[in-house]
Image (cartoon, rainbow, N blue to C red; front, side):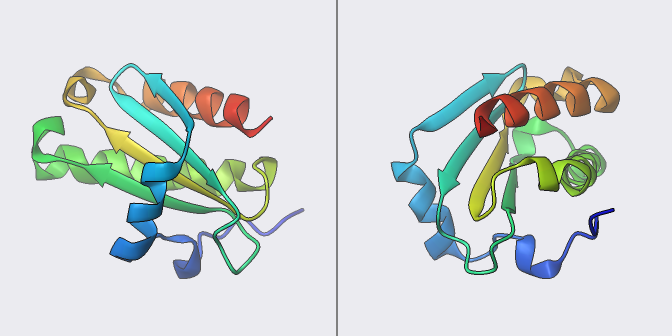
Length: 116
């Protein structure tokens, strides 16, 4: 069984890495979020993720719940995604109405479809 831990090195935190997503062409919209994929930037070989939540997506409790749910989903599907790929999930204002379980289903479907 693969290691399902979410390592600190799998988080994209530096602004330099965020700016590289502008050139990425693989984008998919869901109801309340946008998923962007970029290949070949991570040095660890494992997939990495960046999560962007603005204040328009809800209060602090809601934004933290969206981030936690996204990290949990990523932790479970990381081995089904291509190695050395970077992912960014941007939550849009309609994300206030998404239920967390629906979010996980929609997000996993989009990410797995983009990985092929």
